[in-house]
Each structure stands twice: as C-alpha cells, then as structure tokens.
Image (cartoon, rainbow, N blue to C red; front, side, top):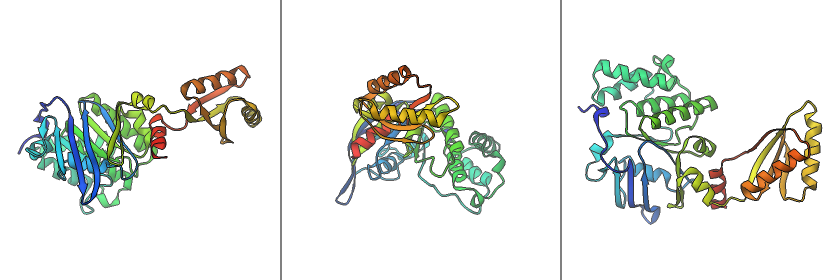
Length: 323
C-alpha cells in the first residue's frame, strides 16, 4: 500500500488538457478542450446543463477515456499511468452514494485503510476530516440516517482523507443548507491556501464567485472563455445588472415609494422596478451606469443602506451566453 500523502506532483500544471474530446455515439459532449489549471487555486467550471462539465470531470477522474486528446494530472498522463494519477487526486460526483449499513466512521475508516493508512493513522485522518466538515458528533450514526446535505459532507470527508493534490467536485453543495454551503466555501479556500488544487462545478453561481480565483465557461461542449474570474466577467461586456437597493430610516415604506417614483421619472433606463423590502431594478451601462445611479440617489437625499448586485457577474455572463 502507498500512503497517498507522500505522492508529489512534478508537472507544470495541476491539470492540463490538450485537444480533449468526448463523444457519445454521434453526440459530441466535449469539443477539443484545451485548458491548464494552476496549482493551489480554486477553479470553477461553469455552464448550463449539458455543457459538458460532468463529462470533463469523468475523464479527469479516470472514470472514462476521452475519444482523443491528452490529459495530465500533476504531470501524470491519465492514459499512460491512471493508477498514479488517481493517487494524487480525489473526485466527488454529484450526489455520490454512501452505504446505508455502515456507520459514518466505519465508512471513512474503510477508505483510510484502503489508502494505506494504519488503524491509528486512519483514525487520526478520518477524525480530522470529520471535524473539518463539522460532522464529528455524527461519527457513530448510520449513513442511512443522515440528511442529504450531511451525506454530501461525509463524501467530502472521504474525498480529502488522503490529502489529495487535486480535488475535483461536481456540484458539491447539492442538498446542503446555507450554513453548510458557507462552511464548504471556507473548507475549499483553506485547502487551496494549503496547496490543494480545487476544481468545482456548481449551479449556485454566486457561491462560485465567492470562492473561485479562476473560472472556465463551457457552452455546448466548448470552452468559450477562461481565466481569472474578474477578467472573464469583464470580457463579457455585461451592460445590465439586477441591483437591490435598501434604504435606512424608520419610514422605510414611505422612502421606498419615493425611490420608486424617482426611478420612474429618471431619464436613465431602469426596468422591472418592484419593492421587496427595498427596490429591485435593472441598471444599464455596466459599472459606470451603476456608479452614476448611486451618485444620483445620494444627491437626491436617499439614505442608502445597501446597493449591490443580486447576482454575480459570472451568472450574468451565462445568462447572456444562453439567451
């Protein structure tokens, strides 16, 4: 047995895909993917359903072979040396099953021992991982009795047991409550800070924008843009953004009515004005338009408590791409 934590990456990139293609019969799921992901970053792979995210992850995790093209994990060719590649990575698919007849600690101990840890080392590892995902108190519960979100966290604990150099997560927040999703973001950013490359897909795009240093956008199997998060957003040239304006003061409804009246008479184009404990509106003109409107509101005497986009910039890019 090999202690996985002793495996070292020797490639230039954590993940490198060259002209990677995935076909299912006559259907092309991934078209000539060329992508390099740096060590120690949180990389988000985003796209609509059917964009090719899961097919890409399945190839990288060595669960299937590409139709053609090359992929390296930590410098290791996954076709030439799949076993070596697996030793330095972990893959957590969307809604991965857990055995109903094992207790949480038994499930994790099974994998720790298969990774080459002794009984005492294995216990130390799964104890640390359960504490990291905030499930230590559930260690003696049967997996079948856990909520869906807890099962996701158990699977995350399993994925990080062997100190993977590359962690691939497909929709990891599925079924988690908001507090668990916030905890997940903290865990993944901490892992990246400690040198693990985290690659994650999610439909909760605001959460990706909160933790990813870089993103790639897949659309109908093609990588249409990638790079540092803000650069990808800026290249999209998003002109309109949904904003939420919250006001301070005791007579909030009266102030909200005044704000709505002001916006309806304003020369700028503000669409879909409605009140939701504040005012939600579309602001045109990109960041400059947002700044101009905020300046107007302050000059008019409105006491602004919050003025922020409802969605992330990457979310707006996806909406534009798929519209």
